[in-house]
Length: 254
Image (cartoon, rainbow, N blue to C red; front, top):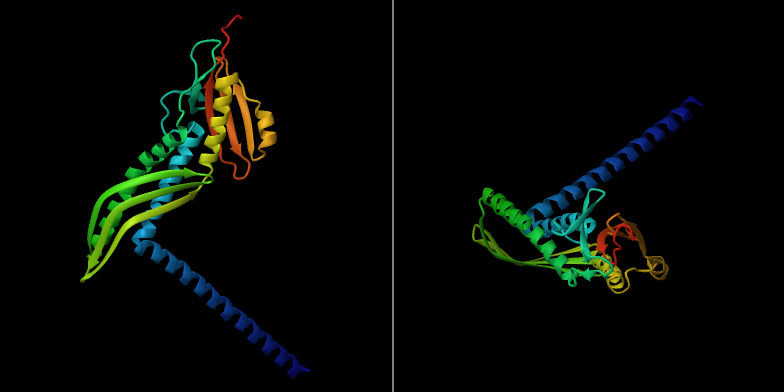
């Protein structure tokens, strides 16, 4: 009986040892793959710049969407400490509001581009500095950029000649593209529908709108100066856009 128990104990020890070895090997493989991916992203200028573009666009959108689609709105109403741009406004009384931004999507594209450009310049400068530290020669040309909003997507294109050479070997890049998943375009389309209805009828039947388009959750707050703040929420990803409107106001005392 003692011999049998010893054999069973030895078998158990070998099984435990085998499991431990397999676990260690798997862990080493995972760490190696993660290190390889990190190394690839650092050594690949295209990946580096495109990630920089994605970060810059996302940062721009985080600032823009709560503020009516603008990084720094000029004509706005402060509501809950947020500068919410007036998309439709009439400072007088009784008359419907006037659309202040009939080309809102194009303006938003320009806002994204203006915000991202200096950050991209900084990323290119960092790339140049890092490569030169490695003893490489770097040439970077002038930059042209373009942001395009589409349904559930933002596309950012960068045209810039970059050449990196060392020991007679040269690599060249001329175009960088970033694709960002974001409903900014779709939110702006809903904002446009609200503005058009308010400009024509002084109101929008937003409850019925939500029944028709179940993707959207719309709330309205009316302030003491007759400003209306609409919050448009995408139920699919919880992204929001705030807009301000003022029209058909009734003077105090009437």
